[in-house]
Amino acid sequence: MTYEDFVTKFKKTNSFEKYWNYFISIAVIGIGISALFLLHFTDWHENKKAINENIMPVWGIDLSVGPLIFLGLYGFWRIPKTYKIASIKSDKSLAEKSNLINIIVAEFQFIILEREDQYYHFKYTGRFWTSFDIYCFYDANNFYLNTQQIDSGNDGGFIDFGTSKRLTNKIKRKLLDNL
Image (tube, one colour):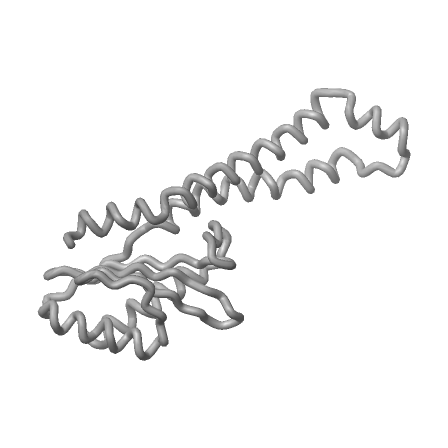
């Protein structure tokens, strides 16, 4: 397997989740914008106010809809980072790299889901039962690594509060310590 094969396999594995997350981001932005449109360009608020006098003021609705739009925009910023592949330069032999992967698997107690030559797909359960998919590939020059939080057997989405990045950095530090 080459790096290009790894990238192709990685993209095929994650293509549905990526587009699903973009769809969710677009839907959340759309809901926020449509709520703002109803509020500011129609008589919706006035009609509701006539029926029920205990309705939230316009500025309160603006403040409650704003986070929806922000969440959708955050998704567009964050989703590409979820599928970014980190690389670590290493001139060790392939056998030494394989041994290093085995050490890391034992230390982190990864569950090997798939193994193919220099390609590995792991599952890791962290604190608070948070699960991660870890994709790892190495060739003559580099290690390549991607970590994604998952939720109940499916994609965890783009809101993981930085846990995927922290786990990636933890694995990278361990790899660099043993190089």
